[in-house]
Image (cartoon, rainbow, N blue to C red; front, side, top):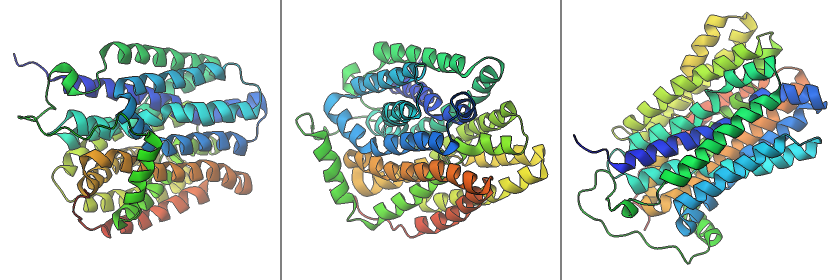
Length: 415
């Protein structure tokens, strides 16, 4: 029987690490109303805390990529999971709104940064020579799947008991994942005496960065990237990607449904349903990114996502569960299907060695968009007592993103 290459074990560990980090960060969607009721905090203040989290974990991406090069993959994963775990534990003791911003905005935002930004392309680039697109598809699918799949369970716990029991479940999952990383994670294939999956002969080693300052490395990569038109187009389209996914849907979808009388468990189940289809859609997107023009893939992803966001307010106004299920399937398939083609384009332009940090900056733009939508959605709700305008505008912006990606031209790899 042929032995499984350890690259696939690493992929599995990264998959569940990302799912765990996604569960921690995205559970904010089910805590908005409970925090509002127990502490009396304004929804825009709660949204601000979650917006800070979205922005910080995105901004930390390029620095996390540089730190991996200096500190090593395993240590960085352990540090990040420990940071997440500490934020979850501190949630039990918060009493003031500023504490929510520090714990969920800063600590959990930074703790989730490694897992939800650059871990996927790093694993794919360093552990895989073949099936890179598929590896990225599987790992990025876990990002949204983790953010969505456990939400119904958390919602049921909150509804029948307390948000503190839901936090307790998240804490246990984070602790288990810390142990798995500690005992089974490896830094590189070299540690196992292996070559990356699909590589038949040893390639020249990538430049060593152990003595370089990670902050300098991150800004050097940014300095080179900003001179390239494709970087701005990818960053601009990814800003809209973040705005139209985790920032808006991930933060406000449940509250939007509740405002139309839909029970919280039903709304959370819809999000979980999206997560299941996201796993399919993003994995297939990774497979497609190995075979087709990534620009046209992104064009269709953004166009179809925009159409689905314009459908949602109508579905809620009609009170049609059938249309909501249709939205959940359609939108779920496209949730983060944009990530594999975006990573593929950045790798083609900036090369394997630099693309991890450059993609970190592109993803920082994604999370800036998510932060705008997370805070802006709460602000729009306070002004209009409805989220409809927020979702309508997100749909329009997706149409703009679909045009951005078609302007990207194939360029030579930057040395």
